Length: 347
Image (cartoon, rainbow, N blue to C red; front, side, top):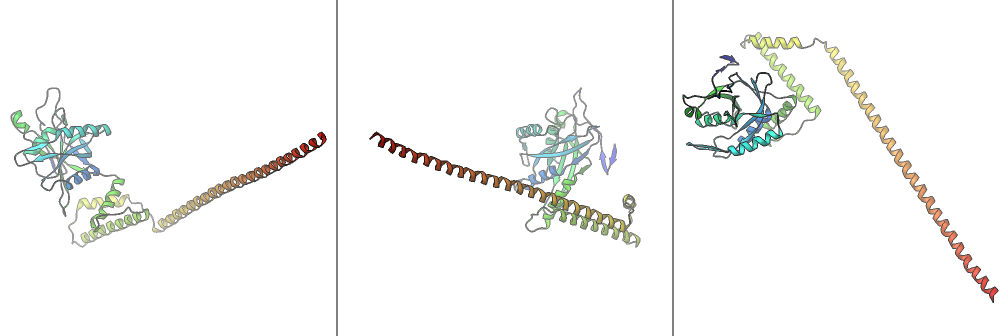
């Protein structure tokens, strides 16, 4: 038993195990990629009006060292019908989609399933036991159950679980499960962060749309965000000094470590380096324009020489043709005179 980020891990069997295979009971950490989360939210927004929740399959990778970290890269929807008495899941469609996805992404494997509701009931246990079963499931690894609950005007609530079988008989354990919370993180790269920040601009727009920012606009927004964070930290420090805000030792240590990493440079040196950088950029831009102009002039000169040469050759060919035609006419005129002379001498 251990505790990480306030989460309790219980090492329990994951169900009836075969003799040759033993289930994994190692505590897990789940990392969710933004593209998987967006796919789940898109599926939730397109669900039928009478549907309480929709479900789907999660695919990802496990860490190469100890399989204790699962990264969820993608997800796809699975059709199901749920009433108060029964639940039906299209497992044939799930198998076909899983096979196609693994052909396109051979490094990803089945890691679990998701639901767009935070409720955990008997139907959730049935679906969880199917995804964690042997053969078609994640066995001997635990199946991750991710709940993503999002409503209009509220923040998205994400939770991650693994399960442990409950029951003294296999029949009883097949339709029951104890869901154990596990810690999770939503990780994104710098490219994902830029896309998420662009999407966040649309939440305050009336048209719910946004445009891609230019480099200058992105730089301006980054500077404004940095200034805003510095102002927030400054207000917090002032509040602590004036005893208006309760101090936090962890936050103070974090700020101290962050400031210790910052280089100690005078403002004059920063301004000089910035001006030098601007001059270097202008020099490179000037040289690039000069090279572009030189290449344009070279192309124009080469094209002009080819055009002028073709015109002289055509003019000389036309003059030669006229001379040949004139010579032919003279030979034709000589012919009749010789014929007339021969006829006179014969007479």
